[in-house]
Amino acid sequence: MIQKAELHVRLIAHTPDPVGICALAARVCYSALDYEHLREKLESADPAPFLQGVIRSGHTSVLEHASFTFYVEGVSRALLAQLTRHRIASFDVQSQRYVSLRDRFACVVPPRIAALGPEKEAEYMRQMETLGEWYEGWQEAFGDDPGANEDARFVLPNACDTRLVMTMNARELRHFFALRCCERAQWEIRDLATRMLSLCREVAPALFEDAGPGCVSGPCPEGSRTCGRAREIREKFARLQNNTAAPAAE
Image (tube, rainbow, N blue to C red; front, side, top):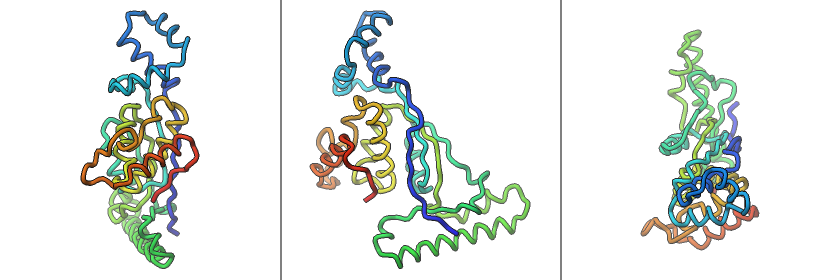
């Protein structure tokens, strides 16, 4: 029986004291002090205001010293194709060669299909069920062939769910959020990016409090392609900052 996939995102690891390590890297650039004195200077005051000033100045290379690792499940193979375009990142993805989907074929349901009503969603799920049957049929046809999964998977759809572990540094995450939290981004990766940003803000607000789509910290970078909702989007991410609004697909 085919299942409906559900997105889950967890921040499973990050650099200890990410704000402190990035602030230390920035201090090295602007100070003649040795390591011990730099640590004393940083520990004597909150490093966040200094680091935020460095970020506003555009000196964002210091953010590459902090990394964040996420466990993601319930996303489609269509999303995976977009995600791996962000090359300054590390990915490990559940293999369709080594993992059989015979017992757990799940699919992502696009909101546009769900919005058409229960009958249309049921029709979509029947279509996915048919593809799952084709997949199992090819597995059976290949018998004990060790390559059965890798060839049977060719009939699986983009909607087929997957899971992965992904690591990015803070600088690349800010770039990722600027592109993928934007309303013009595809709905699934926008949902993922917004959830990731919420998790990052919880552990390192000084690194991510002004992160999000381009219109959060300045004019919309999309020009004539703007969604025209900059004020609404700024309010949305301000609520996210205060943990009063849970991100969701639209």
